[in-house]
Image (cartoon, rainbow, N blue to C red; front, side, top):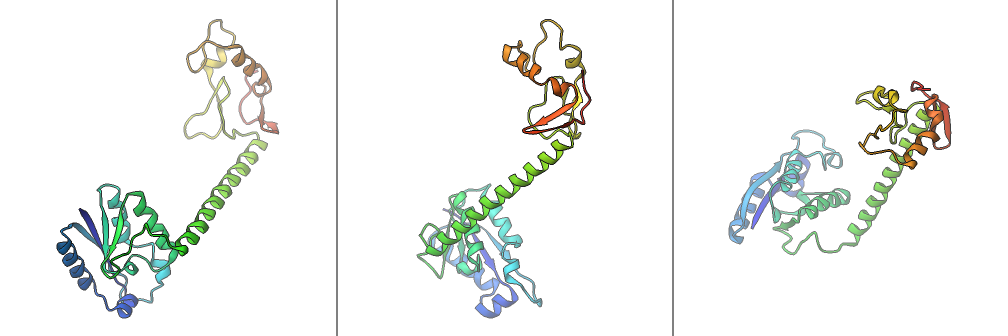
Length: 236
């Protein structure tokens, strides 16, 4: 069974708990040897000595913790072994974030001082925080979508390209914001036997789509209900 250890101490935490890094490391090594587990590595966060610490702010910004979570994505680890779960988190939000990552990789926690602890046991507090975080995720997605929509509408009102499939006869080059005339397409619109951009013969629907976009070829940009003088060059 492959396991990793995690040890953590800060000036405030060490004074409060009395658990030094050396003590935590020795306990984890002894426990893993007793259980017959393959201890691959012990990750550590030593904190900032002699500083006034804001442990809330430092909860996630821990190099050792980040390295440990990144390690889970490359190697199959069965357990993260700690002296106490307080070494991993001290707030409910951080607890839920870490547990989500562990569950993603099928990893559980073994706490020496809490032998029956498992992230798979139901906790009403976890349920509440999970629900709040899911709502926050949804809110952020909606907020981003709203900002994108506002941005696209603003660009469309100014006649700029706001996204979607590029109209036949034009092209969108990487690094450029506006559409450019595709000379090969533009010169061949009336040529007999010309194919679509997918190298297929034109169907009635595709021909109708081009005819329906006559105003676009005349320099008028339409996006939903928005219509404006386009920034693209007119073909006809």
